[in-house]
Length: 182
Image (cartoon, rainbow, N blue to C red; front, side):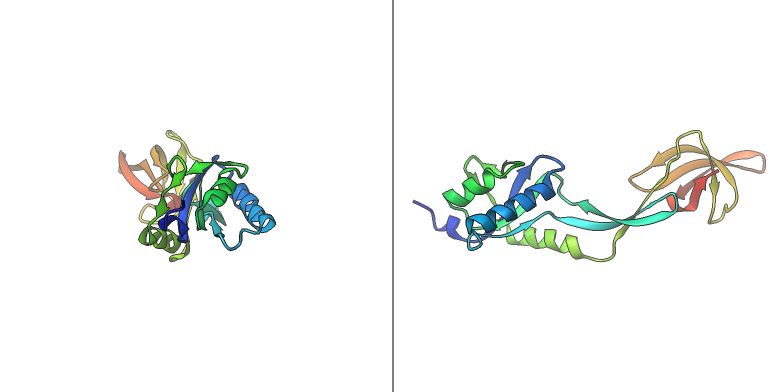
């Protein structure tokens, strides 16, 4: 017998093969439509956030997955819906134990949804420089100086480099968008 809790509409996290999130989403949406499950499976979501990637001076908007390897499904869980979602190509299982998926809390799901649409796109700048390479500083206090790279921090978007000032090597920390290859 189904418990009362299971007959409620909740969001669930479904684990997928990495890189198959969008394929699972479309397969699941197609299955919902063909099996007439619209009254049991309501939404299928791959949480993404727009980011602006700046590489070699060219900006483009990319969609970055917030939870790689997961698809979120708003549904009423019963034996049939559990089986149909679980047996969709690319799905490895629900988050939870065995045949008892754990619903995602309302506050947590609201947080996920707000992350998807909040604020401006984050700027991610990638540069192709390596330690030991000489770069040109294109803005800031040391504009037009040449500098030798000593470290690259992709997560923070920073380069540490040495510039020649008054006959001495002086360390400086620069943002990726302040430098370019020489």
